[in-house]
Length: 448
Image 1: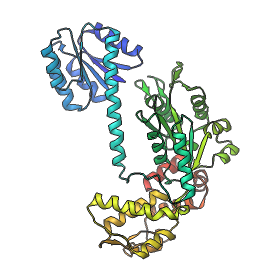
Image 2: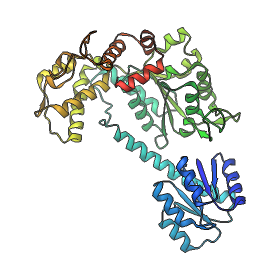
Image 3: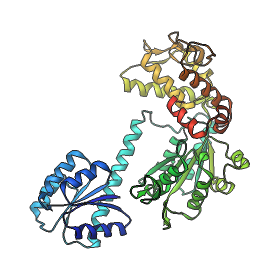
Image 4: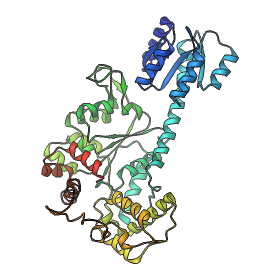
């Protein structure tokens, strides 16, 4: 954790700081109310250790100020003048725990253990809130397709083990949802599910995000940082778009997979990590190995359990069910009671190729639920190529040079067409004359 120690006695600040840093935490210190509040305004901390007798300041008043400015930030009060009344008052004002001076390493460790359990509980609640905030209906792992049922069977049989899983498939086919479901079906379900996204970040930032760094390791590294490997300790590390990982970082990832060891950027201390790795990509990794952009040894290490999530165009039996689930979900969300689809709309859904897969389907149904004037979604309510409503100024699927459209719309249509036509992102980026990180950012901005 990143911990702020607030105490007016330097010897206390230094000794507590040493104990905490020996235990692997990062600390900063403040000797007064003003310094403490300024430090909290400039940096993010997971815990504050606050003395009650803070020189000319009242620690309990500082506690109230911290709670007001940084709600939810855990604060532990410590003091030499410990009384039941002081402890009760501190807890009433929002302190999470109470520590009596003088305290030893073991007593401090017990309090920190309680704080860390609280922190993990908060992370778990936040994770659940984020899942709700993704505004998607609950994932259903049932299918009318024998092919898809076989994939689910492999995934959930592997979930009970610690085996590395590689999930292949086009963008929008549900790779992240599948990875999260495997985590929740595993023995690590109570621990963290941590996602690392490679595209759009420089090599240095990816390495820091993954493994962490120490203060001064590079420009901008103003304090120690624990990476996502540490955050996922005991749980699952999901490496999304693993095919975009730079070659020199692939060697470090291989070491993590083989030896469960890693080092933070800028330090030589070898650390252990108990993480279960699930990776996903829409690239052809076999071809990437042949092209020399992906390590062969890493490919075989990842390729313990491999499944490929099929695109929607290969799941006609599930397509209408997905669409109806989205109608129910968005109907509840927007307060609309809809009967479903007209017969023509069903035919149009089944005939569309859905290059954006579930992501495209979700967006299309959300729009239809919002805009349809009646109780039933018709074919003209679905923004799918030729069936797009006449209110559109142009046909987004077939723009032409010289048409009365914006540059952004033209760029969106061009990139979308290339994504449908070409087999992987590397080829699309090469045709566009940009690198893959730039392509990733453009796709995210344009919603592709």
